[in-house]
Structures are given as structure tokens and as C-alpha cells.
Image (tube, rainbow, N blue to C red; front, side, top):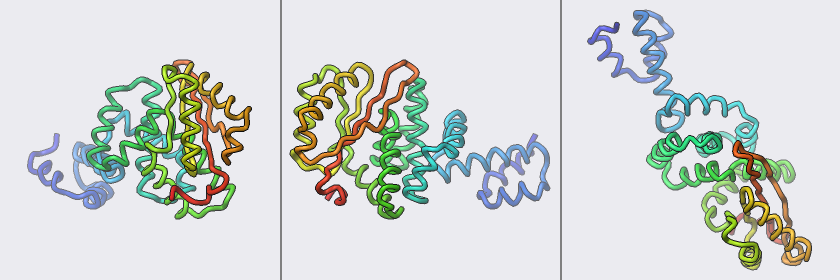
Length: 255
């Protein structure tokens, strides 16, 4: 048991001070264990802006080693958005497992620390959109040899314009409505936009986009189409993601 006076003194120490104390090993066994846990808690708060729950924290450490996270880091470098992307990838895992309470707690913490940009990236994760975005970033960086600075600015523009460059299609929207919405986006000459859909809605979206592709509407309007992701979640539903790129002004980033 830690004596009250020692405990009070430990609570006042900063992260660097606790690290030195732990390395020195000059305090009792119980105090050492407490310091170890305190260091972990303070480190996580410094890294993420808040202290994640244990199940969230362990998942975040695993994501650090994931291919998706490493590809993102390679694209945008040591960017402030990296922590949010890590959180977004964890949200995607939790969403697939139906961990609603853990997701809600993380959303509250992220909003308090990062505001709307943080919530946008979490929404990318919860809707299954983040992985296709990461793949897209990686693809265009490799293809065009863009710098990390360019890619960082590009990703920032994606976040800022997210609501205006995404279509989340649901079955009740109908095939024809989706066709008209895609044509409207193309007529607006957007540099890039995304269509996401899941399950039976994805099958409907696939038919709508096939119609536009087969009658060459997409090509005539100067767009290139890519199906960038199709995966199955734990509920057996397929996730579809399409990217429409304007071939005339794609080098302009959302200007």
C-alpha cells in the first residue's frame, strides 16, 4: 500500500518526472506499479488528447502496426491527423463488432479535443469510408509521386469538403435517384467524389453506376470510375466504395 504522503506527492509529478522515478526504481513495489499505470495513462492522454478506455487503448496500440495506418503515415507524414486516423480505424473495428457504448464514449472525447474535424474522421470510420480513403491516398501518392506535404493538404481538403463530395446510398433512395445525384455531382465538375453503400443498397448502387458506365455517361462527362473497396463485415454484408475522379482538372485539389 502506498503511504498517503507519497501518493499525494506522486500525483503532482509530470510525465518526465515519473519516467525518471520509474527508471531509478527507488520507491516501493506498490508505488512502482502505480507509477507504471500513471505513466501509461498520461502518455495516452498526451498522444490522443484524452485517456481511452482499456479496450480502446489496446486496440489503438495494435492499429499502430496495421498496414492501413502505416500507409497513411507514409502518405501524410507525422501529421496531427494521424491520431484521428488511428481513432477512426479503431471506430471502424468497433462498428463492425456493434460496440455502440464504446463508440459513443470515444465520440464525446474526440469532439471535446478535436471538434468537427475529429467527428468527421470518426464518421469515416463508422461508415466504412476511411479504409477506401486511405487506399485512395496511397494510390495517388504512388502514381504521381506527390510529396507528404501535398498529400497532407489534399487530405485536409477531403475532410473540409466531406459533406459535399460523398453520397451514402440507401435502398429507399432508389436506383434512379442515385443516377440523378451522381449526374448532378458530375455536372458540378467536382474534382472528386465518393459513393458508399452497404448490403442490398450496394447491389442497387452497383446497378445504377453500371447503367452510367455502360451508356458512357461517366466518360462523356470527363470522369474516371474506380471501385476501390468491396468487403464483407461480420453481419455478412458487402461494403461498396466508388471513386469518381474528374480527368480534366484532377490536379486541382478542391479549388
